[in-house]
Length: 369
Image (cartoon, rainbow, N blue to C red; front, side, top):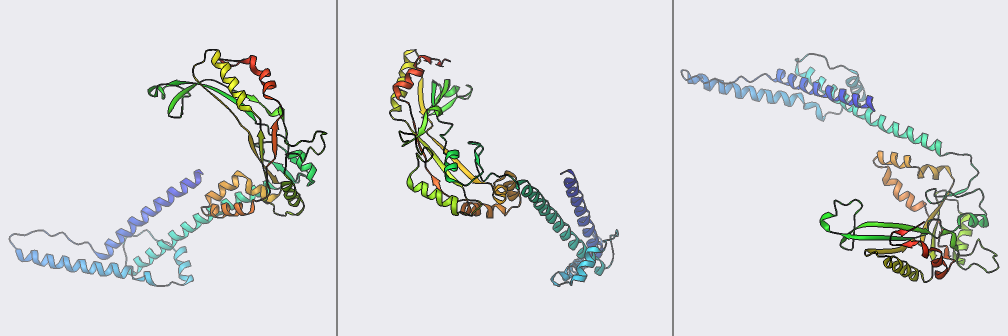
């Protein structure tokens, strides 16, 4: 990066020197217009000086026009190569033809420098992209893997039963959240650490805790005898769509989206019990009880092209290429399609039973462990 900045600084200095040198040559070629000195004793001299200055200005204008007259010409490739490889000299004066040739050389050389900078920029992007593509290659036997930010799951076969057993696991981040908030004046909102705005008022956290429910989750529609547990929770239409995808789909970028939804009958009754228990302990603030009942899991194919396009460095390189994202976004939107499944789960514990597990640990201070 440092050498690139030094290169830009040197190039800017050369540009400034060339501009000043070309201006000096124009002044030498056109001739300096003498300043008029008023002579009260000889007024006819002022008139002659004025006429001389006007004619000198016209000659300078015609010389400048002649100097840049060759702009409309179409030079041959040989002339362009000679202009690029030729020097500009160190002198500040000369004939109009020589000045015209020097200006032509400087312009072609400036365009060449700009073209080389753009070429080096894109060559660096392509080289980095080739390294990223090589990093995306692997000899692993894994065929499908889940988004590691959600669950680090993977499978080395395309069998439907194995797929369902691996990726149809109950979600891991289903929690019952309880927050205790105390209202504060709006004037103190900026002074209190962790203050939040909710429904037009300002509050600060007094306590906050979450209760894990993932151990109580089971697929909806689970048979009583425990058979076919892998397919429980999915509709017949989703199962057929997944079967066709595993057997026929050849798109490396295709994904399987699984929106796992959880139901819990009469959970509002549990929320009411929690609020009453906390208020009986003397808490007078706002109590907010909620629970997260869904989780999105995306399953990808382990293919080189797909891994390369999913890498963060690839998206950065496409952004640096200026026009890359104009291709990337619609391409991924069109190609990254696949089955959208909706597995159903439920909390397999009654409200009364769960309340007996947590009631003695809930107080006005939150959850006492």
